[in-house]
Structures are given as structure tokens and as C-alpha cells.
Image 1 (spheres, rainbow, N blue to C red):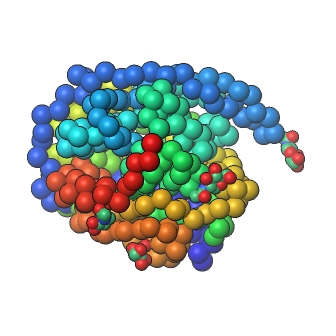
Image 2 (tube, rainbow, N blue to C red; image 1 turned 60 degrees about the horizontal axis):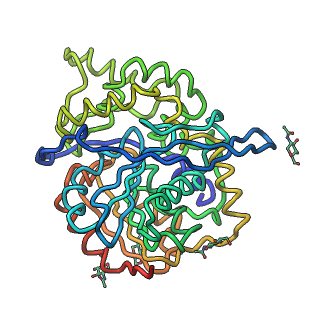
Length: 371
Ligand SMILES: *[C@@H]1O[C@H](CO)[C@@H](O)[C@H](O)[C@H]1NC(C)=O
Ligand SMILES: *[C@@H]1O[C@H](CO)[C@@H](O)[C@H](O)[C@H]1NC(C)=O
Ligand SMILES: *[C@@H]1O[C@H](CO)[C@@H](O)[C@H](O)[C@H]1NC(C)=O
Ligand SMILES: *[C@@H]1O[C@H](CO)[C@@H](O)[C@H](O)[C@H]1NC(C)=O
């Protein structure tokens, strides 16, 4: 059973569920932030062939004169703006490097969606941004598939990432085996969407490019939100359940949860329109997942020695992540580990920012900067 669960974490992403009072709308104008750009080495891969390429990638560099840095990795369907409340809080005393992952917004991507985007590739992109900013060390803070990136950052590059603080997705060691995408939806019906995004990326891109606002809003929900019962379970459509919900409730659009301001939603819509959704499915592809797994097995060291923290939301419609963490024995691969739960859906740093920020700040005392 444990073996078969390996894939769940790789696949995980998304979603939001339901909940209470949305976080207060802080004054935040995404358009007022200027991105930095850096050209990074990457690989274009076909079955047995790898060609070096360059990718121009965008990132945010906030409060660049602060001594200590935090890296913040976003997930899907998300953007750097997911960390706006942390920018307000931690941008006062830390420098923040916030990547726009390859394929999102203004960051380029390789041609092959399925072969050229392993977790190691995402980690290398972040290291390239840190080099560009002359940052030698930082803890990696992640949510959704950004959490998977940060686990791999702490495992493979403890020299650059002196801590890992993740939301939701537990650490799933390659030591416990690999589950192909086809097994995912059988294990948890709410992983159905991941099979869709990985097996039918063209269809999914057509569907989501047609309604970027719906794509974003469908997931930007909170713990008390009403969701269609079959949302995320379908392997042949993403928004289908929401279309039926809207029709049967005689409303015109997916309800706005208030988890973000309208301005932030508008910014996200514009960002996703730049390149479309297709290359934002890079974290889900079977080829990338398998290459990530093979790489970890080849290196053979599964245990993270840097300080780690896992924050498990208890009202996330995608999964009960704390139970999942127990099943995959996440804590047994983490030497210096803390965790706690939070009563939110999928985006606690947006839904309950004060509580999230308090938890993060308390843990940061464990992180030692040696360089
Ligand atoms: C790639 O290499 C493996 C092992 O060397 C081989 O089994 C496989 O057929 C090769 N695939 C292609 C497409 O050349
Ligand atoms: C795992 O192995 C890689 C490659 O040898 C190394 O760079 C990395 O530091 C190791 N990670 C840990 C946590 O020991
Ligand atoms: C939370 O951390 C403690 C201490 O490391 C550990 O014993 C426990 O198994 C962890 N819980 C989960 C769900 O990983
Ligand atoms: C380490 O993190 C835990 C959990 O957040 C916290 O209770 C503890 O105070 C931290 N230790 C230090 C030295 O800051």
C-alpha cells in the first residue's frame, strides 16, 4: 500500500475547499512589483537524448538588502502572488526570492512537457536565481507542487537550502517505490484531475485557456466553500463539474471566495493568458515524475538532514495530508522535523495568513545561516 502511495505526493496539487471568513484583503498591487530576469542552463530531453538549452526565467527579489533570505515556491494553478501576505510580513526583515516557475507567466520552458521538467530541474532553476541574486543559502518554503520542489531542494542541495517549510504535500521518499499516473485516481478519487492534466494536456489546455478565470477561481476556494461533489474527480474534464454546478444553482459564474482580491485574481488571469496553461502542467507529467524518482533512487539518499516543517491543512478537499504523511512514513525520513495542522483548505498562507505567518516565524529560529 505504501509503495503505491508514492505517486500521490508527486501528483498532488491544487485545490481548495471550503471555509470560513476569508482573510482580510490587504492592500497589495501585484502590478507595482518588478520582476528580475535571468538566463539559466537547462536540458531539452527526448527519450534517450539530452541537449543543453537556456531558459530565461523571471523571479521576484524583495527587500534585497536584508541579510537573510527566504525562497518561496508556488504551485498550480497559482503564481508568486500566492505569497502576498508573506511579502507583507517577512519582506520587512528578510530578503525574499520568489520564483516564477518555468512555463508560468514570464518564464520560458523547454519544448518537451513530459521529459524536461523534473523536480531537480525546478530546483536548479531556483539555484540559478539565487546565484543571480548572489544568495548562497536560504530555506525553501513551498505549497502544492512547490512543496515537492522544496522537499527535493532540501534532499539534493542541503548546501544551498538550509531548511524546508512546506504546506500540504508531505515528503514522499523515493525509497518507498513509484506509482504510475494510472494508479493515482484509483487511490484517491480526488486525484482524478491529475490524471487528466498528465494524460490529456492538450485537451486540458484548450479547456482552461478558454476560461482562465474559472480555472483559477475553481481552486481558489476556502474551507467553508461549497464545491461540486465531483470536482477534481474527473479524468476527462476539469471544469465540467463546475459548469453543471453553476447551471443547477442558476448562477452565472463560480462563486468568488474572497481568498484574494479581485485585483489579484485579475493579475493571475493576465499571467496565465501570457503562455496559456499547457506548460503549467509540467509538474504532473509521468515522464518527469519517473525521471525524478529514478534520479533519487540513483543518488540513494532519501533522508533530509536540514530542519524541516510540514503544515497540514485539515479541510483540504484534495486529501487528508496528515494521514497521508503517516502512511508514507514521512517523518522517518526527516531528521530535524516539526509539523502541525491548520483548519483551512488548500491555501492556508492565503486563507489564514496571520496564523500561518506566526507558525512560520516560530520555526525559522531552527534555521542556521552559515554563509
Ligand atoms: C533508451 O535506452 C534504453 C536503455 O538503454 C533502451 O532500452 C530504449 O530502447 C531506448 N529508447 C529509445 C527510444 O531509443
Ligand atoms: C544526496 O546526494 C547528493 C549527491 O551525492 C548530494 O549532493 C546531497 O548533498 C545528498 N543529500 C543529503 C541530504 O545528504
Ligand atoms: C510530526 O512530527 C513528529 C516529530 O518529528 C513525528 O513524530 C510525527 O510522526 C510527525 N507527524 C507526521 C504526520 O508526520
Ligand atoms: C523550532 O521550531 C519549533 C516548531 O515551530 C519551535 O517550537 C521551536 O521554538 C523552534 N526552535 C528554535 C530554536 O527556534
